[in-house]
Image (cartoon, rainbow, N blue to C red; front, side):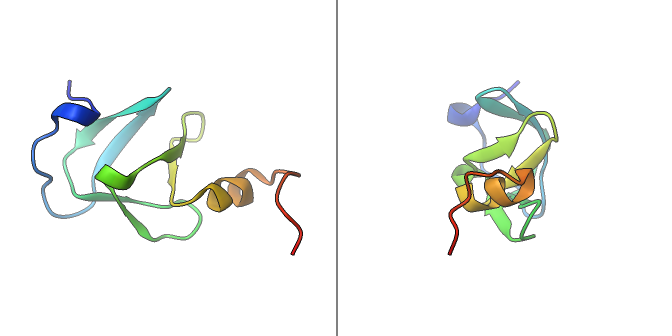
Length: 76
């Protein structure tokens, strides 16, 4: 099992990832995952936000708030 610090160079295409508490495991190698809210590709080396329960990745903290429908989202 690989962790964040000992990954080989990514293969092109979308990765399949198992999201864990504080880390993730690559199930199928790839260069990126997609944000569950926006659909934008997130390079694995930049992946910071995900839901263990929903097994989804998010591009930004705002995407997390939008997905979870949090009452903490700022009103604009």
